[in-house]
Image (cartoon, rainbow, N blue to C red; front, side, top):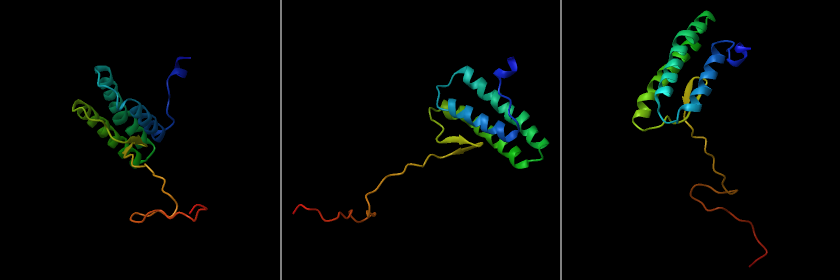
Length: 123
């Protein structure tokens, strides 16, 4: 019953995704001693357990991704101490920028030309 409470990843890829989701939940939270300790725990988990699991899977790319992710988590504390936020989201072990804003434009509208409107019944 106690084992049902804790998440057990299947492989290194699953562990990296899980830690990414955890980091996204707390990355903008106010800095506390408990959160710094939790962040350090995740860094140790990535460097020791996940990197070793990737080596056992004979996957150097995942090992490198886990170590890069640990480095990103290590930079989180000084960034938050400066009062700044980590921009973007952690996705599959990498911090991605959120530049996905799309604006709807009127049909036929271009950068330097006004939109063309069809003929109307009004004069």
